[in-house]
Length: 67
Image (cartoon, rainbow, N blue to C red):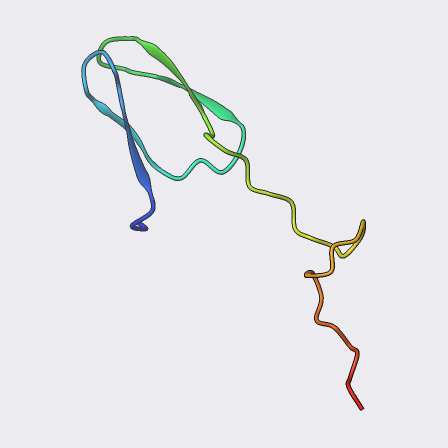
């Protein structure tokens, strides 16, 4: 397990439901102890990588040289 991983526990009975890191989207988990359904959602989506379009000057190194 990674140190950045989270522990997801049932809010009703406290049973450990999952360990990990939710990058994007959502997941539904049923607690088998108390039968409570939980929907886990990513708190913030991972940003798209910069491709250098639309004026993003920091995506690629500059190829200009001083003379």
